[in-house]
Image (cartoon, rainbow, N blue to C red; front, side, top):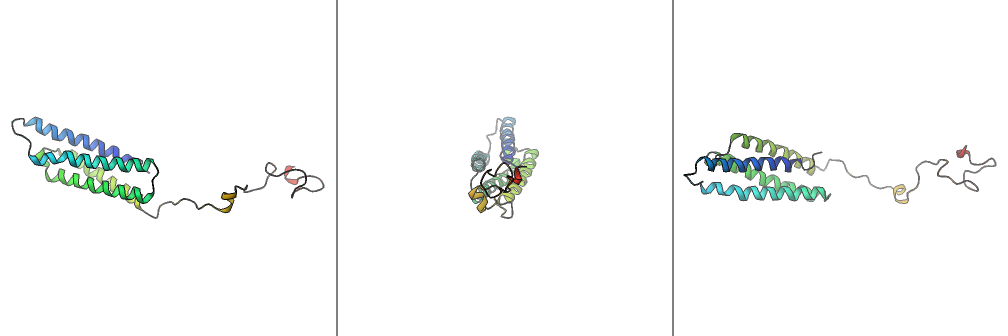
Length: 161
């Protein structure tokens, strides 16, 4: 199971995206970047925040429903970010490789979300009465008493021999 892998891949993509936007603005210093490209930073920060919230909830072993809800909000934010990148690729100078990596990471995030939100996964074992009382499952010489007990006969404890 992936533990926080989506946040790491998202971080790599966001760093690459940030470089792509800065590189595009560095190539054409005479022209100011369009106001559309300024929307990248808030979208990126929102996606990063939602990824970190989901990662913190997983580390804290939160309830499955809560993790599922956080992953759903993260995947939605990530899809908005990718849509922005695809729509404004030429205006903001986003490299094709960044879009490809972001889309691949989004696919991984959706698969991870589907696994986390799937109710058919392994469920915790329901405790039995033996678990609650902490009784030994099998009698042996180490967990039976010598002397006057259930397993004592005239010649001693047969389990102890």
